[in-house]
Length: 563
Image (tube, rainbow, N blue to C red; front, side, top):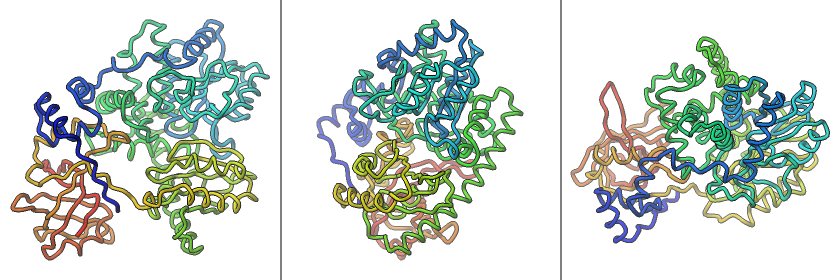
């Protein structure tokens, strides 16, 4: 792995901030590296306020969206809340439908079938709306490229409001309103919202018109925080505020659907990492293995016994998903080896029988293994569908733009995308994607990078430092947990491999008489030889609390080890 040490800011900046905040130099350095240089910025960072949220009417078309929903309610129209089948889409549908149904009953939800309809707005969904008397569809986490579908709906007398956060194409659909902070003509000050975040801005605007303030909407933020974590958007600016308050709701008064999941866990306090790895996969499993509507049913449940049944059902889907994910990952890895493709700049694999619901997870697994921009294809009707994943620093969406003449349809983000193409185009696409990536990627990006915030000595790792670092949370893109580096470490003789096949590494480190402090390195079991027999080593790590039998101690969460 590449260790990249962040440049140390100017000493004067660090000293000025340390004095203003009454913190030590290391903490001040971490803050300056995050762009925080004065007391007011630090206050905003450590004490996020709902008042820091932007006026929702700054978003282009928000006034039109609110006006059209008001008209629908006044005329007793039927409203269909339509969303994608992943976590972002299903949480957004749960959020908006629950909010509208507080004061208006002619509201229904629709999640497209991943296998029958595919991603985004579908003709089948529009036909469903027409057949059942819906005259307004509010599309969440999708729709910004659905030009033909929105035109088709208009022919049937159905209006569209689109709430999306994906990059628009050169032309927007002819909808009543297109809410998307990534629109080039949108003056909204923050463009990193997820789909559920855009839905929250819509209910914030609706609430303002109804005389509500943002405090009244805080109970919805458990959904928003979950979507922010699952969709891997930056936890900066407005997203940080939404996540901060959303986690408070998850840990104090979660909605019944979340409570049904959380009650089966041993953890008392959930971090955003727990939400991403515990709650989000279960919500996602419904759309992957069965149907996303099951997730909406769980998230909108009002009876705990019913919610518990939904949660048990989704737990079964998640168990099935894990089994398939492991099986297909092994097949995909074998395919790469069999075709001798380890030295390529990309990993592109295909099998017609692979389960469409898990190819995104498999793509992530392959990226972890070979650290290349990766696509996993499977058969979907008469076409092939793929999930794409990228490596840090490389825009896979732009790479797909360079292959657009081989692709039927695609959409997504810098690091994750989806696409469909005709089967006869597969080999052409595979060759073109390799050409585009090899010509545009910096070869350095093909080695995983650890970004180290600062060197540290073991004697500086104290409960006081940990108390401050905890206040840097919630962590995520744009505000990752601080990573430190320590040199001249030796193990006390405690080091050993743990877990299945001794895959993980446990150690107890000392440095110039300081310590010992325990460490755990997941997936680092093969580094045991580097530190045995009192060999000196360097480590990159974050610092965390380890609770065991009621005792809390500090430990190093090891990212990498060097001799």
